[in-house]
Length: 366
Image: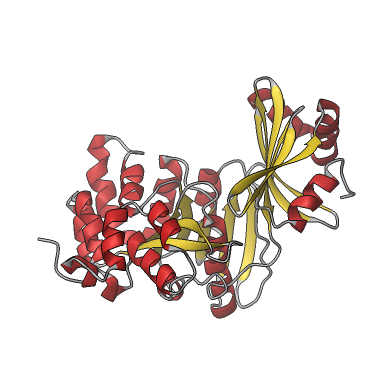
């Protein structure tokens, strides 16, 4: 489409490598650069925002916004780039949040993700869940896994997104990308129909409810690989969040299904690089080994963190183990690592060369 009334706002974001742009009616525009909010002098008027909405949306989309107060769409600005966009109302005024979707899909190696991620990307069946808060790089990591498959496997990959973020081009694999609201009515409906479309891999942009998760479990149980994201801070919380989607009398069955079908949980945060520009992924990685599967099945979720800490031989790591590597490699400062850590006292001990038995892969589960 042609350039819009917010062309300069979006161009400044891309020129300054901003991840997000925050636009509020009659307020200065803010950019998130390397995780920090940076303001500018430009103030967006109601007339300008109304004009922008008119330029980029269909009448059906405008009806959705008017009726619900929220609209999620993707937008391509000529000569600038693609953005994921949420339009919303706040205090009766228009607000917009843009996420810049870079056209280049970075590889696992370029992202400097742990080597075990390549092994996870080779999985043929089960469920891979990528978790973290908003803005933690979940979509970028998931895209890197899918791109690895695209380059190394001959598969049919279906993505279900709201809206579509990264655009994939067929290499060794064949991609079909479906956008909720444009190509399909719902995640759950698209998942159900995807099983009739001969997929090998199904990517679900976000797991939002029990209906979607039940469909994902069914897909995994019938030999497919499902990759999805969830808002959770670590692996144990991820399992808890999933179980909370279901009634108490259903949870034993879901634990059994998870123990059988879960492939891995990858939890992610971002840490500022020591150079002062850019951010590094910090990961907790839980692989569904027999020990992990047993703990999930027996509802001993409080033991998962210890099993992860002691599972380095299986490719697992917790946040402190990842942070220690990043500090030792000079990529992240000690101060930033301690601020991000859930257990800064334990990390301080690690910096001094002091490790508990589980830190070195010792026994921990009885």
